[in-house]
Image: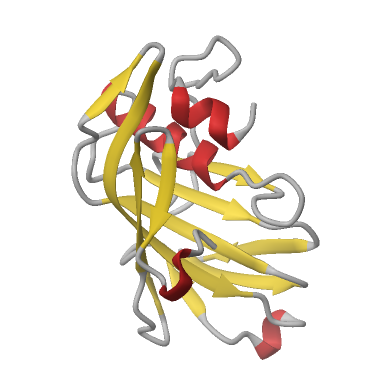
Length: 165
């Protein structure tokens, strides 16, 4: 399932969700994860679609819905509600800020203002650039997030240059 396919039809039969999200880890209840997000597979649109479906289908509340995208050769280490990103690339911590407008069968997704915190990886946990607080859903260095909009089956970003990553 590609991002383009997910964004153009959020209820494609190949896009399945379970209500058994991460449990038992502080700050991760109601979170969904996706791997190989940027490098080869370009899965950011798919992850945004998962978040829209979680809210629309009543699997989580808007306030509890979270997404974590982890790139290749990268890991997110969680300890006591704090996440450290290590490896070669970055992790993306997503949180919707408003209800999705349109989430329907064979209809392009309309979902605005999905907040994204990009946390670059450090070579080791001991040399972490930023720690991500899962309870506050914020970076320890207070770096500003950017926002994604899914409109008409396309994903756009508030970042300079328009990159969704």
